[in-house]
Image (cartoon, rainbow, N blue to C red; front, side, top):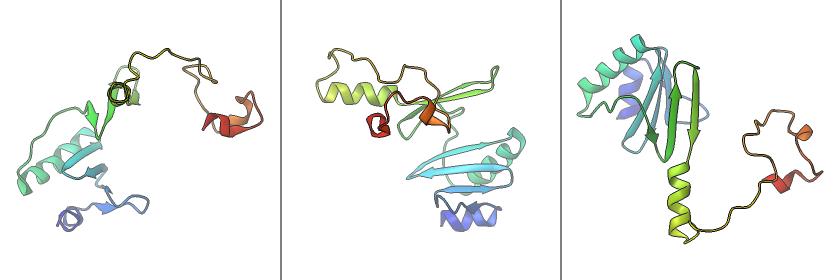
Length: 130
């Protein structure tokens, strides 16, 4: 039903992920009954209007959390940060590790991994970092 409707408004499921719909200069990611829509404002508004006419749903505004991922957007610096701080803290608490002692990371915090990761590795065995 969803796929048929999205097709009727010009969206097509991505080959890599059948829950990602692309078209009309927007991207829609579905997860059960949650929907994340991204795109240029004018195209996004048109698509949202069509969706709101088809189904009873709410527009929750700019995304902060989607399927456990926290999303922080800085429009001024044109950056997007995805993280799972809430999930990690909840998991540590559930495992009774929320008061455990921290340990140093093998790679310094804040390191940006690039395609040439071997130059960042201190050890020959990359599995240490997996």
